[in-house]
Image (cartoon, rainbow, N blue to C red; front, side, top):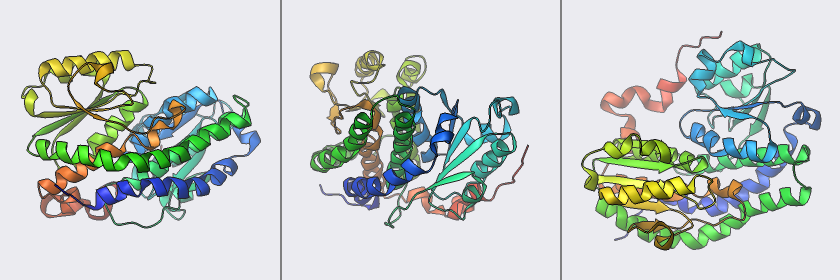
Length: 377
Protein backbone atom coordinates (compact mmCIF):
# COMPACT_ATOMS: atom_id res chain seq x y z
CA UNK A 1 0.00 0.00 0.00
CA UNK A 2 1.33 3.41 -0.99
CA UNK A 3 0.13 6.49 0.89
CA UNK A 4 0.99 10.12 0.36
CA UNK A 5 -0.15 13.32 2.05
CA UNK A 6 1.15 16.76 3.10
CA UNK A 7 2.39 15.51 6.50
CA UNK A 8 4.44 12.79 4.81
CA UNK A 9 5.92 15.31 2.40
CA UNK A 10 6.82 17.59 5.31
CA UNK A 11 8.49 14.68 7.13
CA UNK A 12 10.51 13.69 4.07
CA UNK A 13 11.66 17.31 3.73
CA UNK A 14 13.19 17.30 7.22
CA UNK A 15 16.74 16.15 6.30
CA UNK A 16 17.21 19.00 3.84
CA UNK A 17 15.51 21.40 6.23
CA UNK A 18 17.97 20.46 8.99
CA UNK A 19 20.88 21.33 6.71
CA UNK A 20 19.35 24.59 5.51
CA UNK A 21 18.19 25.75 8.93
CA UNK A 22 21.46 24.89 10.64
CA UNK A 23 23.26 27.33 8.36
CA UNK A 24 20.72 30.03 9.17
CA UNK A 25 20.13 29.43 12.89
CA UNK A 26 23.66 28.72 14.10
CA UNK A 27 24.75 32.29 13.38
CA UNK A 28 21.55 33.76 14.83
CA UNK A 29 21.82 31.70 18.03
CA UNK A 30 25.46 32.73 18.36
CA UNK A 31 24.67 36.45 18.13
CA UNK A 32 21.22 36.96 19.66
CA UNK A 33 22.58 37.34 23.21
CA UNK A 34 25.77 39.21 24.13
CA UNK A 35 28.42 37.69 26.38
CA UNK A 36 27.50 39.97 29.33
CA UNK A 37 23.83 39.06 28.88
CA UNK A 38 24.66 35.36 28.95
CA UNK A 39 26.81 35.74 32.06
CA UNK A 40 23.93 37.49 33.82
CA UNK A 41 21.48 34.59 33.41
CA UNK A 42 20.60 32.97 36.73
CA UNK A 43 17.39 31.18 35.72
CA UNK A 44 15.65 30.32 32.44
CA UNK A 45 11.91 30.02 31.79
CA UNK A 46 10.66 28.43 28.56
CA UNK A 47 7.09 28.97 27.42
CA UNK A 48 4.87 28.19 24.46
CA UNK A 49 1.56 26.62 23.41
CA UNK A 50 0.82 23.41 21.50
CA UNK A 51 3.81 22.26 19.45
CA UNK A 52 5.88 25.14 20.84
CA UNK A 53 5.21 23.92 24.38
CA UNK A 54 6.38 20.44 23.29
CA UNK A 55 9.58 21.99 21.88
CA UNK A 56 10.16 23.71 25.23
CA UNK A 57 9.71 20.40 27.07
CA UNK A 58 12.06 18.69 24.61
CA UNK A 59 14.87 21.08 25.51
CA UNK A 60 14.23 21.91 29.19
CA UNK A 61 16.49 19.18 30.58
CA UNK A 62 19.07 19.92 27.89
CA UNK A 63 19.33 23.57 28.94
CA UNK A 64 19.99 22.44 32.50
CA UNK A 65 22.37 19.66 31.46
CA UNK A 66 24.70 21.76 29.33
CA UNK A 67 24.36 25.25 30.85
CA UNK A 68 23.90 24.22 34.51
CA UNK A 69 21.30 27.00 34.80
CA UNK A 70 18.01 26.10 36.52
CA UNK A 71 15.36 25.91 33.78
CA UNK A 72 11.60 25.49 33.94
CA UNK A 73 8.83 25.13 31.39
CA UNK A 74 5.73 27.17 32.17
CA UNK A 75 2.54 27.04 30.07
CA UNK A 76 1.84 30.44 28.58
CA UNK A 77 -1.43 30.92 30.45
CA UNK A 78 0.25 30.04 33.76
CA UNK A 79 3.05 32.49 33.06
CA UNK A 80 0.61 35.24 32.06
CA UNK A 81 -2.03 34.76 34.75
CA UNK A 82 -0.46 32.92 37.72
CA UNK A 83 3.33 33.35 37.80
CA UNK A 84 4.20 35.45 40.84
CA UNK A 85 6.00 38.71 40.24
CA UNK A 86 8.45 37.87 43.03
CA UNK A 87 9.84 35.16 40.75
CA UNK A 88 11.00 37.94 38.41
CA UNK A 89 13.47 40.76 38.79
CA UNK A 90 15.30 39.04 41.66
CA UNK A 91 18.47 40.00 39.79
CA UNK A 92 18.95 42.39 36.85
CA UNK A 93 17.20 41.07 33.72
CA UNK A 94 16.25 37.75 35.34
CA UNK A 95 14.97 35.25 34.63
CA UNK A 96 15.61 34.91 30.91
CA UNK A 97 12.16 34.09 29.51
CA UNK A 98 12.24 32.38 26.11
CA UNK A 99 8.89 32.32 24.30
CA UNK A 100 8.38 30.14 21.23
CA UNK A 101 5.69 30.88 18.64
CA UNK A 102 6.24 30.59 14.91
CA UNK A 103 3.34 32.92 14.09
CA UNK A 104 4.03 35.17 17.09
CA UNK A 105 0.32 36.01 17.17
CA UNK A 106 -0.87 33.73 19.97
CA UNK A 107 -2.51 36.11 22.44
CA UNK A 108 -1.40 34.29 25.57
CA UNK A 109 2.26 34.31 24.50
CA UNK A 110 2.26 38.06 23.92
CA UNK A 111 0.42 38.62 27.17
CA UNK A 112 2.95 36.52 29.08
CA UNK A 113 5.86 38.43 27.56
CA UNK A 114 4.33 41.78 28.47
CA UNK A 115 3.83 40.57 32.02
CA UNK A 116 7.39 39.32 32.53
CA UNK A 117 8.84 42.45 30.91
CA UNK A 118 6.87 44.61 33.34
CA UNK A 119 8.38 42.80 36.33
CA UNK A 120 12.08 42.84 35.54
CA UNK A 121 12.66 39.79 33.33
CA UNK A 122 14.56 39.68 30.06
CA UNK A 123 12.49 38.22 27.22
CA UNK A 124 13.62 36.45 24.06
CA UNK A 125 11.08 35.58 21.39
CA UNK A 126 11.67 32.76 18.91
CA UNK A 127 9.31 33.51 16.03
CA UNK A 128 8.97 33.69 12.29
CA UNK A 129 7.16 37.03 12.44
CA UNK A 130 9.00 40.07 13.74
CA UNK A 131 5.90 42.23 13.23
CA UNK A 132 3.73 39.98 15.40
CA UNK A 133 2.56 40.61 18.96
CA UNK A 134 5.48 38.53 20.28
CA UNK A 135 7.90 40.14 17.82
CA UNK A 136 7.00 43.61 19.04
CA UNK A 137 6.90 42.86 22.77
CA UNK A 138 9.97 40.65 23.32
CA UNK A 139 13.20 42.33 24.39
CA UNK A 140 15.09 40.34 21.75
CA UNK A 141 14.07 38.20 18.77
CA UNK A 142 15.62 35.08 17.27
CA UNK A 143 14.00 35.21 13.85
CA UNK A 144 12.96 31.97 12.17
CA UNK A 145 13.04 31.92 8.37
CA UNK A 146 11.40 28.66 7.34
CA UNK A 147 10.94 28.19 3.58
CA UNK A 148 7.31 28.01 2.50
CA UNK A 149 5.80 24.53 2.19
CA UNK A 150 2.33 23.11 1.76
CA UNK A 151 0.21 23.38 4.89
CA UNK A 152 -0.10 20.54 7.40
CA UNK A 153 -0.13 20.21 11.18
CA UNK A 154 3.27 21.46 12.33
CA UNK A 155 6.18 19.23 11.34
CA UNK A 156 8.80 21.56 9.86
CA UNK A 157 8.00 24.35 12.32
CA UNK A 158 8.41 21.97 15.28
CA UNK A 159 11.82 20.79 14.11
CA UNK A 160 13.04 24.35 13.50
CA UNK A 161 11.80 25.62 16.87
CA UNK A 162 13.52 22.71 18.61
CA UNK A 163 16.75 23.25 16.69
CA UNK A 164 16.74 26.97 17.55
CA UNK A 165 16.38 26.17 21.25
CA UNK A 166 19.14 23.55 21.14
CA UNK A 167 21.55 25.89 19.34
CA UNK A 168 20.78 28.60 21.87
CA UNK A 169 21.45 26.22 24.79
CA UNK A 170 24.73 25.10 23.20
CA UNK A 171 25.82 28.71 22.75
CA UNK A 172 25.01 29.66 26.35
CA UNK A 173 26.95 26.68 27.72
CA UNK A 174 29.88 27.43 25.40
CA UNK A 175 30.12 31.07 26.51
CA UNK A 176 29.89 30.06 30.17
CA UNK A 177 32.82 27.68 29.69
CA UNK A 178 30.86 24.53 30.58
CA UNK A 179 32.67 22.74 27.76
CA UNK A 180 35.23 23.56 25.11
CA UNK A 181 34.54 25.17 21.75
CA UNK A 182 35.44 21.84 20.15
CA UNK A 183 32.78 20.09 22.22
CA UNK A 184 30.25 22.76 21.25
CA UNK A 185 31.04 22.17 17.59
CA UNK A 186 30.62 18.43 18.10
CA UNK A 187 27.15 19.05 19.53
CA UNK A 188 26.28 21.21 16.52
CA UNK A 189 27.77 18.77 14.04
CA UNK A 190 25.66 15.97 15.47
CA UNK A 191 22.57 17.79 14.18
CA UNK A 192 23.89 17.72 10.64
CA UNK A 193 24.81 14.05 10.95
CA UNK A 194 21.22 13.30 11.89
CA UNK A 195 20.04 14.79 8.61
CA UNK A 196 22.07 12.21 6.69
CA UNK A 197 21.04 9.28 8.90
CA UNK A 198 17.34 10.23 8.90
CA UNK A 199 17.44 10.47 5.11
CA UNK A 200 18.68 6.87 5.00
CA UNK A 201 16.17 5.60 7.57
CA UNK A 202 13.01 7.31 6.33
CA UNK A 203 12.11 4.77 3.59
CA UNK A 204 12.19 1.93 6.16
CA UNK A 205 10.30 4.00 8.77
CA UNK A 206 7.73 4.86 6.13
CA UNK A 207 7.04 1.20 5.29
CA UNK A 208 6.70 0.30 8.98
CA UNK A 209 4.37 3.18 9.83
CA UNK A 210 2.24 2.59 6.73
CA UNK A 211 1.68 -0.99 7.84
CA UNK A 212 0.83 -0.03 11.43
CA UNK A 213 -1.50 2.77 10.33
CA UNK A 214 -3.49 0.32 8.22
CA UNK A 215 -3.88 -1.97 11.25
CA UNK A 216 -4.67 0.87 13.66
CA UNK A 217 -6.95 3.02 11.47
CA UNK A 218 -10.13 1.94 13.26
CA UNK A 219 -8.74 2.23 16.79
CA UNK A 220 -10.77 4.66 18.90
CA UNK A 221 -7.95 6.02 21.08
CA UNK A 222 -4.16 6.41 21.19
CA UNK A 223 -1.67 6.60 24.05
CA UNK A 224 1.80 8.21 23.85
CA UNK A 225 4.39 7.58 26.55
CA UNK A 226 7.94 8.74 27.33
CA UNK A 227 10.13 10.27 30.04
CA UNK A 228 12.09 13.52 30.04
CA UNK A 229 12.72 14.76 26.51
CA UNK A 230 11.24 11.48 25.27
CA UNK A 231 8.02 12.60 26.98
CA UNK A 232 8.12 15.77 24.88
CA UNK A 233 8.11 13.62 21.74
CA UNK A 234 5.12 11.73 23.18
CA UNK A 235 3.30 15.03 23.71
CA UNK A 236 4.05 15.94 20.11
CA UNK A 237 2.52 12.62 19.01
CA UNK A 238 -0.65 13.35 20.95
CA UNK A 239 -0.85 16.81 19.34
CA UNK A 240 -0.60 15.37 15.82
CA UNK A 241 -3.25 12.68 16.36
CA UNK A 242 -5.70 15.26 17.67
CA UNK A 243 -4.96 17.76 14.89
CA UNK A 244 -4.84 15.27 12.03
CA UNK A 245 -7.49 12.69 12.95
CA UNK A 246 -9.69 14.24 15.65
CA UNK A 247 -9.54 10.98 17.61
CA UNK A 248 -8.93 11.01 21.39
CA UNK A 249 -5.28 10.72 22.35
CA UNK A 250 -3.38 10.70 25.65
CA UNK A 251 0.20 11.48 26.63
CA UNK A 252 1.94 10.73 29.90
CA UNK A 253 5.36 9.95 31.35
CA UNK A 254 6.35 6.34 31.89
CA UNK A 255 6.04 6.49 35.69
CA UNK A 256 2.58 8.07 35.71
CA UNK A 257 1.43 5.56 33.07
CA UNK A 258 1.76 2.89 35.74
CA UNK A 259 -0.36 4.98 38.10
CA UNK A 260 -3.07 5.96 35.60
CA UNK A 261 -3.19 5.06 31.91
CA UNK A 262 -2.78 1.32 32.28
CA UNK A 263 -6.32 1.19 33.71
CA UNK A 264 -7.80 1.88 30.25
CA UNK A 265 -10.10 -0.85 28.96
CA UNK A 266 -10.35 -1.99 25.33
CA UNK A 267 -6.60 -2.59 25.45
CA UNK A 268 -6.50 -4.48 22.15
CA UNK A 269 -7.68 -1.31 20.36
CA UNK A 270 -5.61 1.28 22.23
CA UNK A 271 -2.72 2.18 19.93
CA UNK A 272 0.26 2.75 22.22
CA UNK A 273 3.40 4.57 21.13
CA UNK A 274 6.40 4.58 23.47
CA UNK A 275 9.45 6.79 22.97
CA UNK A 276 12.31 5.05 24.77
CA UNK A 277 15.86 5.94 23.86
CA UNK A 278 18.43 3.93 25.78
CA UNK A 279 20.47 7.03 26.70
CA UNK A 280 17.51 8.35 28.70
CA UNK A 281 18.17 8.25 32.48
CA UNK A 282 14.64 6.85 32.96
CA UNK A 283 15.06 3.97 30.49
CA UNK A 284 14.86 1.28 33.18
CA UNK A 285 11.40 2.46 34.21
CA UNK A 286 10.23 2.87 30.63
CA UNK A 287 11.44 -0.68 29.90
CA UNK A 288 9.31 -1.97 32.78
CA UNK A 289 6.35 0.03 31.48
CA UNK A 290 6.81 -1.53 28.02
CA UNK A 291 6.68 -5.01 29.48
CA UNK A 292 3.50 -4.28 31.43
CA UNK A 293 1.87 -2.80 28.32
CA UNK A 294 2.70 -5.98 26.43
CA UNK A 295 1.20 -8.12 29.21
CA UNK A 296 -2.01 -6.12 28.88
CA UNK A 297 -2.13 -6.95 25.18
CA UNK A 298 -1.71 -3.41 23.93
CA UNK A 299 -0.61 -2.95 20.30
CA UNK A 300 2.79 -1.26 20.53
CA UNK A 301 5.09 1.00 18.57
CA UNK A 302 8.44 1.50 20.30
CA UNK A 303 10.59 4.35 18.99
CA UNK A 304 14.11 3.59 20.19
CA UNK A 305 17.70 2.82 19.31
CA UNK A 306 17.12 -0.65 20.82
CA UNK A 307 14.93 -3.56 19.73
CA UNK A 308 13.31 -6.76 20.95
CA UNK A 309 16.57 -8.07 22.43
CA UNK A 310 16.55 -5.14 24.86
CA UNK A 311 12.83 -4.76 25.62
CA UNK A 312 11.87 -8.43 25.44
CA UNK A 313 8.41 -7.94 23.89
CA UNK A 314 6.74 -8.17 20.51
CA UNK A 315 6.22 -4.72 19.03
CA UNK A 316 6.80 -2.59 15.97
CA UNK A 317 10.27 -1.18 16.64
CA UNK A 318 11.01 2.09 14.86
CA UNK A 319 14.64 3.14 14.69
CA UNK A 320 15.43 6.85 14.55
CA UNK A 321 18.94 8.32 14.20
CA UNK A 322 21.33 7.29 16.96
CA UNK A 323 23.18 10.38 18.11
CA UNK A 324 26.62 10.85 19.61
CA UNK A 325 25.01 12.77 22.42
CA UNK A 326 21.47 12.61 23.76
CA UNK A 327 21.03 16.38 23.57
CA UNK A 328 20.44 16.52 19.81
CA UNK A 329 17.97 13.64 19.66
CA UNK A 330 14.78 15.76 19.79
CA UNK A 331 15.23 17.13 16.27
CA UNK A 332 14.46 13.77 14.61
CA UNK A 333 12.81 11.36 17.07
CA UNK A 334 9.36 12.93 16.54
CA UNK A 335 9.14 12.05 12.84
CA UNK A 336 7.52 8.58 13.09
CA UNK A 337 4.61 10.03 15.07
CA UNK A 338 4.00 12.69 12.44
CA UNK A 339 3.91 10.00 9.74
CA UNK A 340 1.48 7.92 11.81
CA UNK A 341 -0.89 10.85 12.24
CA UNK A 342 -0.73 11.69 8.54
CA UNK A 343 -1.49 8.15 7.41
CA UNK A 344 -4.31 7.62 9.90
CA UNK A 345 -5.87 10.89 8.70
CA UNK A 346 -5.61 9.75 5.09
CA UNK A 347 -6.99 6.27 5.76
CA UNK A 348 -10.09 7.52 7.60
CA UNK A 349 -10.59 10.35 5.09
CA UNK A 350 -10.41 13.09 7.72
CA UNK A 351 -9.47 16.75 7.24
CA UNK A 352 -6.67 18.40 9.22
CA UNK A 353 -8.14 20.50 12.01
CA UNK A 354 -11.63 19.34 10.92
CA UNK A 355 -11.19 21.80 8.07
CA UNK A 356 -12.24 24.59 10.45
CA UNK A 357 -15.77 23.88 9.22
CA UNK A 358 -19.20 23.64 10.85
CA UNK A 359 -18.90 23.67 14.67
CA UNK A 360 -15.12 24.13 14.34
CA UNK A 361 -15.46 27.26 12.20
CA UNK A 362 -14.58 29.51 15.15
CA UNK A 363 -10.96 28.35 14.92
CA UNK A 364 -10.42 29.39 11.29
CA UNK A 365 -7.12 31.19 10.89
CA UNK A 366 -6.29 30.47 14.52
CA UNK A 367 -8.85 33.02 15.67
CA UNK A 368 -9.59 31.21 18.93
CA UNK A 369 -5.97 31.58 20.09
CA UNK A 370 -5.14 34.91 18.44
CA UNK A 371 -8.28 36.91 19.20
CA UNK A 372 -8.46 36.56 22.96
CA UNK A 373 -8.86 39.18 25.66
CA UNK A 374 -5.46 40.46 26.82
CA UNK A 375 -5.09 41.02 30.56
CA UNK A 376 -1.78 42.44 31.78
CA UNK A 377 -1.05 42.13 35.50
